[in-house]
Amino acid sequence: MPVRTPIPFALQKGDARSQVSSLENVINFYPEITERSATDYALISTPGSKPFSFIPNVSGILETHVLNGVLYVFTNEALYRASNGGYAKLADHQLNGRVSVADNGLSLAYVDGVKGYGYTPESFTHVELDIPPSDTITFQDGYFAINYKKTRQWAVSNLNSLVFDPLDFASAEGAPDFLVAVVSHLRQMYLFGERTLEIWYNSAEEFPFTRIQGAFIEKGLAGSDAVTRTDNTIFFLGDDKIVYMLSGFEPMRVSNFSLEESIEMADLSNAKMFTYTQEGHIFVWLTVPTVNKSFVYDTTSGLWHERSTFSDDVFGRHLANCASYFQGQTIVGDYRDGNLYTLDLNYPYDGQQLIEREVTLPPIYAQGNRFRHGFFVLKAQNFSNDIVPIQTQTLGWTADSTCVTADSTIDYASGYQGSPDCSCDAIPDVSQEPKVGLSMTDNHGLTWTPYDWEPIAIRGKREIRTQWTKLGSSYERTYRLRLVAPFVQNWIGAQIA
Image (cartoon, rainbow, N blue to C red):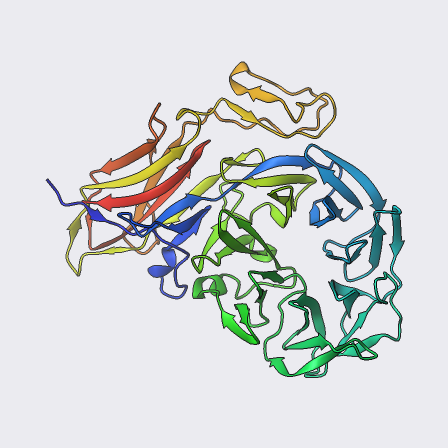
């Protein structure tokens, strides 16, 4: 009987300049350490985007923000509040494709680089702020703080107020570069410039904040939205196209060569970072629209993977443009339209699009000898109520009354069709046979074999072993696996003999 040799899964996208190792990649999976198991890591399916609410006639969700138990949604056209299956319009405005939001516990304040606005829920008042064009806004110790666009200046509001005194401003002092963002973190104010970073603290002087002597870092920020806070630190995309985590006042590189090579030639001014937590994993999310990619860093493992909403045979960026923790779940907004979703580990769709997942494994070498590949085995675990193509899903629709309601359960086998005048999205197609495909290359990715697809849905079985045979021989080889299934599957091991 041939000896089965375990093959390690790829854990993240490989190094960039080496063509062999750069083939490694993980798309719509993330690695998780497996304790007391035959393998060190398993690949866990990333969460799907389960419909939560829908706002019609908007060009995309720019940002979400939770204040006093209410979820606020910002679009180019207006400010809304949203709930599971519903929404309400609060105020009109004109934003230019991005927004920075903060609150003081009573009011929201937000800027887009051109104008600024404030909204106070208690009085239902919406006002335009009397401020110069500002890229970002944050809050600390009773003060809103903003940076003046294309200047070294930043300003604070009056105490517990939306009013900004035009004389209450200061200038970043360490270098002549323009400020890009102001970020409040651990009761210190981080002033990100184009090439430098300096940190201030609340000294309770005439201008409330004073620069911390020696707290100056020769790293700038790539774009106003390319920074986020989580796990008691700050992550940011530097002006040198490297992702950093601050350790005290020291920037620590967390990106790898492959990610850096992917964005080397990109315009990063509209790059965006946000963070969310799920089942003990703290994820830092970086989307770079100019390369159509979403990269996610798991602070638990220190590894990167890609998230993608698969369409038109392309692994492009993920639909999520922002995230907020609301009513015990993570809500994300779609950059393309007015959809809001819950990140759900048991939901195998992004909205109505079936999630496809792909992993390119590390290369296999035979120390200069030709190696015969008798068979390849993938070990997996399926998760669903029944391991057959799922015929029912509960969806949260929020369109007009001709559509399915938020509490309805759709039986796809019954041939349901929405009303012609309904603005709902199409019903997911779950008729596609659940399957996993194996492709391979013996020439470092110059050419790949077509996918050899095998079914993976077996009634009543949770643990699945999928096997491919008669794979020929090679001096070295790289395998790639792709999963297409309307249920969740995690991969727990692979072997070759």
